[in-house]
Length: 127
Figure 1: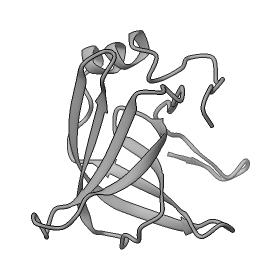
Figure 2: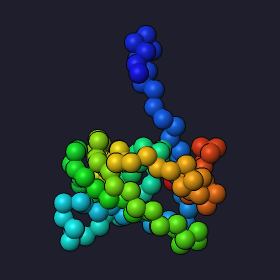
Figure 3: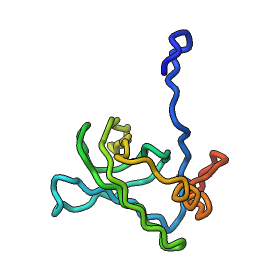
């Protein structure tokens, strides 16, 4: 849905990561099950996508698996996704926008808020 006058594209709400200290995010390449997972930083998440920052390189269109674990809340979330875009930052790290294969369940999204992995107010503690 595009409004030509404002050049605005409607998107589902994205929720910023809260920077939880015990949060671990890893990206695994689907095609290479034996490859070493890439460590990543969760920047934001919606029911249909994830924004990550990582040091490794991924290709647009590449299928991946995102593993989000939080030791304090015992959350262990695995999402299959496809890389939709990549952008190189000045420090060499990459921003990676991913579209999940299946929408995140509302209950799971709620648990991420209750566990302080996502924030509703836009503030971040670790970024």
